[in-house]
Image 1 (spheres, rainbow, N blue to C red):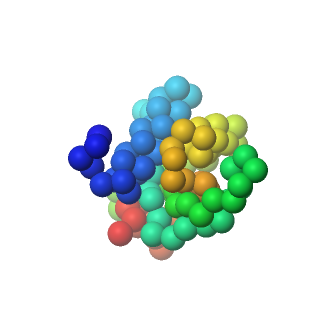
Image 2 (cartoon, rainbow, N blue to C red):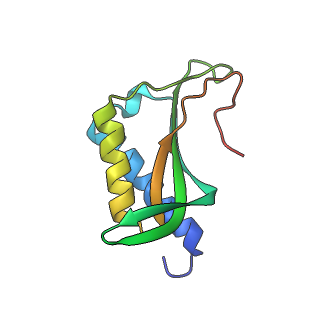
Image 3 (cartoon, rainbow, N blue to C red):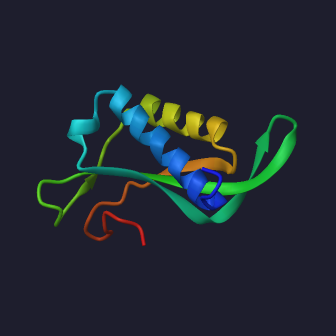
Length: 112
């Protein structure tokens, strides 16, 4: 992935981990759409003995029957926790993970 810009690499890895955790939990077919979003803000964190200033990753998963309305997927906390921990530990450049619980409407499924 050397030719891919760093932000895209970070996003790609975070998204892959999130989808892997969904598959590992046996939830892939219960979810309409799921993805990670690399936000254009950075946050202060602590890794080891040092402070970090890295990206925020938002996770989004929804259920829907027609795409016109959607509800966020109610993950058990241990699955979200495992995904967040893996993303922070395995993806250099992310130090915070949040989960989007916005329904459609008022929000949309995608982030733009």
